[in-house]
Amino acid sequence: MFEQVLELVKKYKTIIIHRHTSPDGDALGSQIGLKNILQDNFPEKEVYIVGDDAKRFSFMDGSVMDEVADEKYEGALAFVLDCGSEHLISDERYKTAAATVRFDHHIFCEKIADVEVVDTSYESCCGLVTEFALECGLKLSPASAKALFTGMVTDSGRFRYDSTTSNTFRLASALMEQNFDTNDVYSQLYADDFFYVRLRAQFVLKIQFTDYKVAYIYTTKEELSTYGADTFTISRGMVNTMGDIKGVDIWVNFTETEDKVLVEIRSSKYTVQPVAVKYGGGGHAKACGASVKNREEAMALLEDLNAYNKENVQ
Image (tube, rainbow, N blue to C red; front, side, top):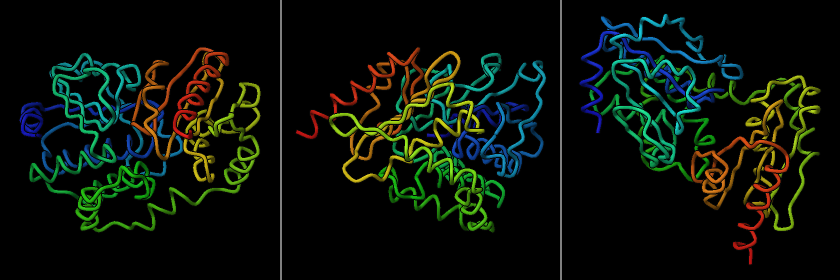
């Protein structure tokens, strides 16, 4: 599966790695992990990572993005990681590279790169990058393994989500053969400041339910400005405050910004991705997102989820 990618890596002297905007642990972990793998195995090459700020995941080693001049893309190979839609790619200069490759584990929506490696059987893009390294006989280091393990943990929900397979544990085991501290990974990911503990408590009190038990939270742009947290923390960071409510199989978080409403949809049982696609979004079968124009459109999306749940609970 990876032979063509490896040949491109060997061919190009400059390699620039992209991922989606507002990165989560998997986007950053795959980006940092791949950079380290390529530098460790091809020290003669120039390897860069680009994109917006790491924010919540800035604790990850190597998460500061590189400053890359436009001319570096001339004759370069660009990777796009963990991104199912072109409009979500952070830094669109990847289009100016001589060749492009995508590694992704989201449901395929559109062709983005010259070479596409898209496989939804992987719980994370980090898992896919790990497979690339192992299959191609590339050595892993503690730094690359730690970054990839961090992303694998975040996208598998600490190996709880049903995307976790025996292959997940095989790849995690290969990473753990490297000498890094898993306690450091978990403490950075899940030990929160009291500010965030209190913030989650505030959002628990905001939970509402539709007639057919779709849980949802709606945050207006006026409310958003009062929380003292960035939009990503409120939107994606708070969606799973609804994730462990007995009897709730679908939940959705709406966050108003100045020009749109961000939507994060999750389910423990059902494929909800078609609803996200209907509203211009996408993602995984049971974890996806979209951006809608206003509250009216957000409520229409919520009603679609309610109607879908009605069919399943009867």
